[in-house]
Amino acid sequence: MAPEALIALGEIANTHATHGELRVRLFNPHSTTLTRGSTVILRRASEQQARRIVGLRTHKHCVLLTLDGCDSMTAAEALVGCEVCIPENELPPPGPDEVYHYQLLGMTVVTTTGEEVGIVTEVIPTGSNDVCVVRSAAREHLIPLIADVVRSVDREDKRLVIDPLPGLLDP
Image (cartoon, rainbow, N blue to C red; front, side, top):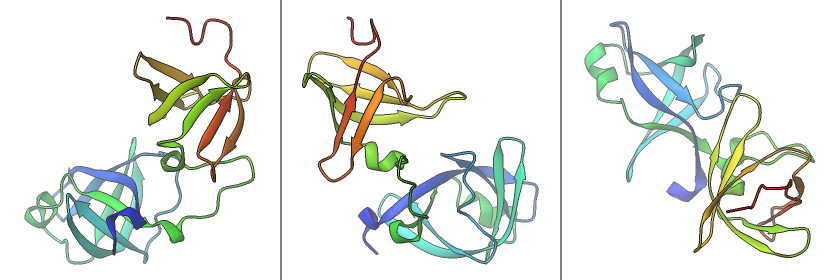
């Protein structure tokens, strides 16, 4: 499977207890995409391996996973640092006004007046709203993904149109 076809849902941050459970930090803490019995792809650099989820539960600010074939702390320690991925075509389709973070990456951000702001290089989830890190040759902007700012998201043309609040783009 091509690495481009995989979407990372989170990263194995650590082990949990001694029986092979894995502490996974999800990039979207509210995601319900992972389910018991489904298969995930563990990715580290160019290495990939498929594993079936045999146990899944939430714990504090993470998810605890038990994977098929991972039944000891030693086996779990070997997986720390791997991304937990699924094929893109297994993601639930976004709603009409929704977009996945990975779809925003690389989008050109322009204002409603046509001024180019830069390219989305990162999306930071926060407690209240997500924020796009937008970089240009001259500087970096933090653009909140809120209805008062975002006017449209064009996935096909990879454009994010914003109506910046006063001071948002000031140096």
